[in-house]
Length: 249
Image (cartoon, rainbow, N blue to C red; front, top):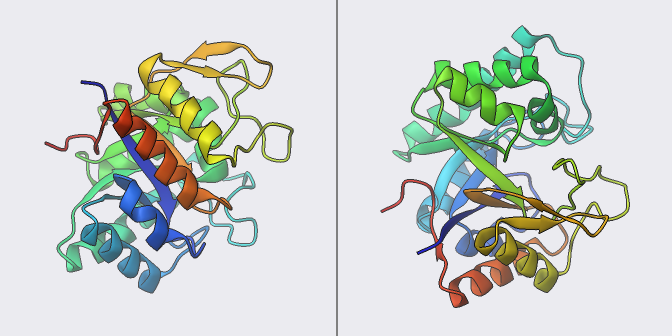
């Protein structure tokens, strides 16, 4: 049976978390740098636990004004430090609630840079490994982050996106460009079904490229995030695909 994880970025004060959580299997929780605070982290961890959703850390650049979507000129050590601090913060709160943390997924510009820059990728992976080597690391399928994780010994989970457009290179279309965002639930679900069953995604130029992903992301701050999450899961289940977090029995 085909199997896929559905993950969502949450704890970012979008107001959609409660509507999204019933339809996903992994939650990437903002750790206070680009969004969130200890109270929100606690609330989101408890929400994920109530729905049986695997909790993960979602560290980003320390840039609340830009929502972590602007690249910052940090040194490799500074990247390491901010990722380690954020993952540790969420892990400490989760431990106090007796809720396990399963994975880490970088956010925004940090995610995009780690996909193509070996130094950034290495700093992210090393931080995750040093905080807890058992954590899974989510990253763009086929990217530098996945390569560096495999070299260092962190279990990497290749990711694709339900609600983002793709370039022919396999990179995401830059936000603000035509075709960058997909907000029609039926279109998003159809794209995900092709990713899972045929391992291809259609690019903005109309061509198909190969994609091999173990998890599919839905951005929690999207205008129709809950509708997309519902329709993606419904279509997958109707087609006989098992939707479950990595490692779930």
